[in-house]
Image (tube, rainbow, N blue to C red):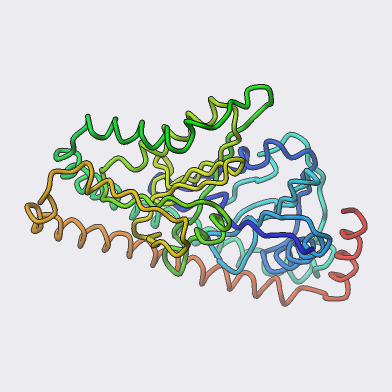
Length: 359
């Protein structure tokens, strides 16, 4: 039987800069192989081939996607084999290998004409610096948007019944975990990831894939209605009971949470509001509307003028940020073209064969 694929992001272009969770994702992986090459096109091809090989053998794999280029991959993890293969550096300049103490390098540079690449060194350096500047500009736009988002939250926070919020949180925790046996005899862990994020084509997520086969709880509400706080408390309690917990952070503000999954208990509970708004499609899906349960009735209508202004300004800033990411992607493609022109397919195929033999 063919294995299953779990897609997610390990890094994000956020209001707090580029924030990565590679250390968390790789914490329980014994063997980490790092691809050292040029650009994303060949490394993505290698990762897809490796992933498909394991899938064909029946192994489940985790695919770490790139938030810069949704067609590119940053890595794959094969949990059952305790193996991960990741690229050495993201375009942000982060050394992904530093996220794990035990790595083995796989050199992809032998598939390229180094003279041709060296001849374009100054061009690549100039474009890379421009890309990094575009990322910084995008993060600044998202930071401004976050401050506007804080205005948005304040309206609902000031109209929340906190006593009801505490009661509702406890009820949800009891519903999800009250009858779950303690698993304290085994070691457990928390793994941090992103379910989606800001990309060069706008917001993108993998919610349907991540939640496939699970009992799903859709939390509906508004900014500042306690969704993230509820998720944090659920995750904390599940970990205290000995369960492995997948924590999916908000791709806009990683200090906030978007989803908690406890696969041993087969449930996912997540913030199902824009930009990752989904609706029940399975008989077992349930909606938890925190606006309806916790916020003073008529709040939307009472603050309609203020909210319309906030939403307009917020969307403008997010749009500016996405445009900067789009500009960065254009520059990245120009660098990728340089590397592709220096790529030798015959040498590349030989390297792929060698990698298959290693793994």
